[in-house]
Amino acid sequence: MRGRLDRVIAACCLLSRSEAQTALKAGRVTVDGVLLRDGSVKTDTEAQTVLLDGRRVEGDGFVYLMLYKPAGVLSATEDKKGETTALDLLPDCYRRIGPGVVGRLDKDAEGLLLLTDNGDLNHRLTSPRHHADKTYLATLDRPADASDEAAFAAPMDLGDFVTQPGELRRLEGGLQCLVTVHEGKFHQIKRMFAARGKTVIALKRLSIGPLRLDEGLAPGEWRPLTESERTEILKK
Ligand code: URA
Image (cartoon, rainbow, N blue to C red; front, side, top):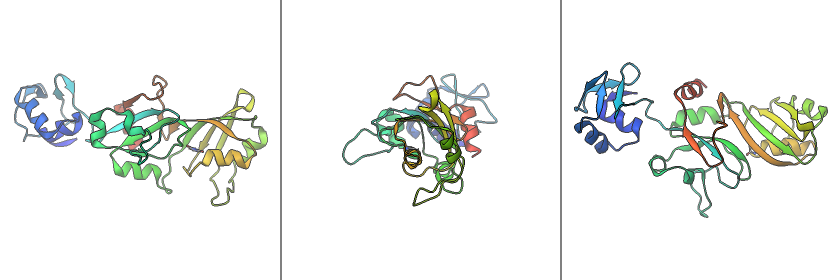
C-alpha cells in the first residue's frame, strides 16, 4: 500500500489513525531500518520495508480473511433474527471494519468463506460474467454413478437457469463427490443433484478460484490470507 505512513499503518495493522500516530510517536515504526516518528511521510510497503514493533507492515489496506464456516452459521454479516453469522466468528478489530462475505454458502453447508472489504474483488468473484470456479465435497444419500458424471459435464437445465458444464468426480464409491461449478446460483449443487434424483446430505466448499480451504483450520476458525493467496485471488 502507498500513502502517508500513519494512514498506511492504520489500514494495514487495523489501527485507528490516532493509534497509528501514537505508535509512531513512541518510536515503534521503522522504514528501511530508519526510525520514523512523522506520520506525514509518504511510504510504499512494497518498495520499502516498513516495520511496526519489528513486524512487517504489508497489504493493500483491505482485509482478506479465510473462514472455515461451520454448518449452522449464516454466510452473512448480520441477521435480524439474531442468528449467528460469519462476522460473529471474527474478533472485534475485523467486525468493526465489516468485511463482506464473497458468495453465499447455505446455512447447513460448511467450508471456505472469503470475507473482504475490497468491494471490487467481491464483485469480480461473484458477478455472473467473472464467476470463479468453486469446488465442493458433497455427501449424498445414494451413490452417484457414471451417468451423473456425464450429466454434470454437460449444461444442466434447472428450470430457471441452465448451468455451464461442470465436473463431478466420484469418491467413496460415489457416496461422496468432488464437484466443480463455474457459477454460484442459489442451492446450485443441491439442485443439480436433486435433478439427478439424489439428495445432498452434507456439503463442504473446498475452494474458490485459486483459494483453497486451509486444512489446518477447524470449523469456526479463520486466518488472514497469506501474501501469495492475496496476490493470486486479486488476479481473478
Ligand atoms: N450449492 C448449494 O447447494 N449450496 C451452497 O451453499 C453452495 C452451492
